[in-house]
Length: 88
Image (tube, rainbow, N blue to C red; front, side, top):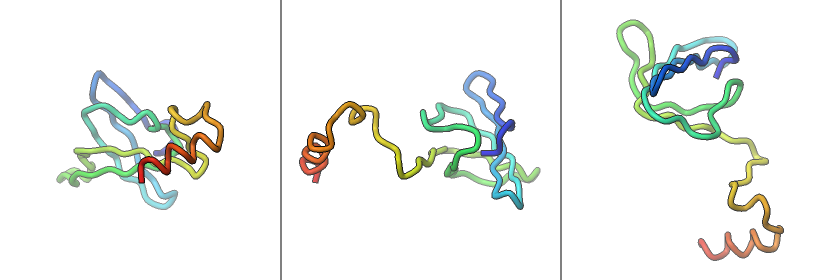
């Protein structure tokens, strides 16, 4: 998400996705994920309209390799391993 490009109004949000070479404006109506931030990676599903704007039906925020879910932040590594093992 290009820094400085996010504009919100009620449930609608417009932002620009860039790979530093190309830019695509995106429009989305709905709740954004907690990890959605300027300067971060994003995955958007939707369609490109006739004006060249991407109309997203879903927006997912990418996290880096250091991401830890809120529920696990206060756990010790041993506790976290036990929770992960239980989900397998």
